Amino acid sequence: MKKLFVLLTVAGMLTFGFNTIVAAQEPAQEAETEEVAETDVEQETEPAPADIMDQDLLAPDYEDQTFHYILKEQFIEGGPAFMSIILLCLIIGLGLCIERIIYLNLSTTNTGKLLNKVEDALKTGGVDAAKEVCRSTRGPVASIYYQGLDRYNEGMEVVEKSVVSYGSVLMGRLEMNLTWISLFIAIAPMLGFMGTVIGMISAFDAIARAGDISPTIVADGIKVALLTTVFGLIVAVILQIFYNYIVSKIDTMVNTMEDATISFMDILIKYQK
Image (cartoon, rainbow, N blue to C red; front, side):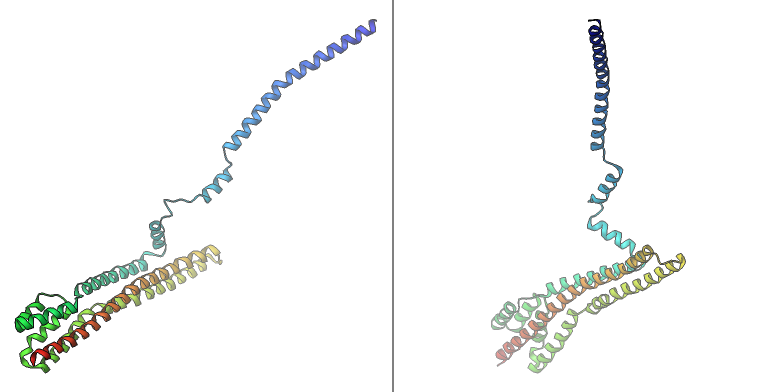
């Protein structure tokens, strides 16, 4: 009986002690669990430095990646010496192209309508009325008509020579400044190639000073050298497009002038008779 009591007492003490230890350990485990949870939350909310660097590299900077910013950056990297000269060629060439386009548009005339007015004036008011119609109309065709009418009393042969001669003068005026535009078209890529050659020489000098063919030195030197060529070719392409448009418009106007002159001479011959 005593042995049974002792065994129950020892079992109760062991059970109480075990429960006390477990009860003491549970708050510690809960605290550790909470600390681990908080650490996990912090790790999830606070990215690692490597992740931050990767995100910065992958995230595009929209303010710095605009076309104006990229163009300005490439212009500076190409070197201000040759890039400024190429830019000057573009500005002057575009100015000449715009001037020619405006001049040609102002010189365009409805030749059929003008020819009908001149013929009606010849019927009603004679040569003086026809000359007044030509004087009040702008454009090379009206100027040719005026020159022919001004020499109408001197004979048709003189009128024909006057019309042909003055037509050649007006054709020269239409083609004015085209040689300068073609010059800038040719010189822009040549300046770019010159900048490339000088840039390559500088790159080889950098390699010689470094004493080693470093990919960084070679790549930077070649990039800077080729930028001048790229900008020179872009300038030449832009000016070439304007040049071809101007030439085609001049050809159209010259054909119109020749056709209108033939019709004008036919009218003068008809009224001379």
